[in-house]
Amino acid sequence: MPSEAVTTRERSDDGVEVRESPIQGLGVFALRAFAPGDLIRVVNVLREITDDAPLRPEDGERREHCAYPDGKVVLYGLPDRHLNHSCDPNAWERYTNGRAEIVARRPIAPGDEIRVDYLINNSGGESWPCNCAAPRCRGRTGVSYFTLPLDQQREYLPLLATWFIARHPEQVAALRRG
Image (tube, rainbow, N blue to C red; front, side, top):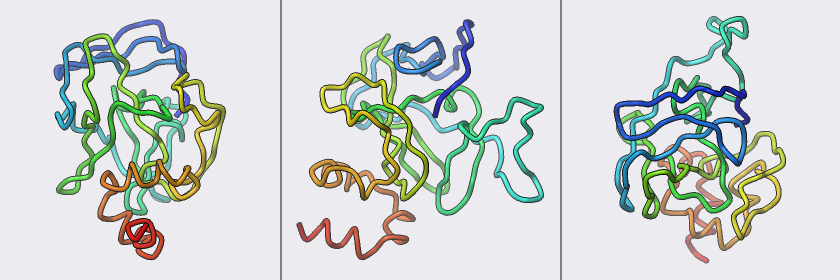
């Protein structure tokens, strides 16, 4: 999700702040340590985007600030709209009880940028150049979980949302069979 260039810092009450990122525009950074499996925060969903309630560009709403859980289009608010992509993410988006949560995949130290792989739970979309600088950077964000290298699909398999699995039962079953 490319983000606009802003030079101010915005802190949330849950241990993260938004500031300039070496990856792209703004990013979300840890203000405290997170261990693997720690809930970093509940995603701030502003509203669902529909034909009756479209994006309002005049209010700064952008397609890049949207997510697509379970066939919906939702607008993310601060700080979550600034989560950057990484081909080797330290966090992931978990869906629990109808809400999205950002969860640590591995230890995150204060000052680390919190990054997710945009292709987890994604079955189609746009791709753009990736600047994550991870050793396993793919060079582009990609367009679908199912186009990831097979080893990454298997690595991310436990992170898939139940709604994503229900939408792609044959492909997920084939991955589980190995």
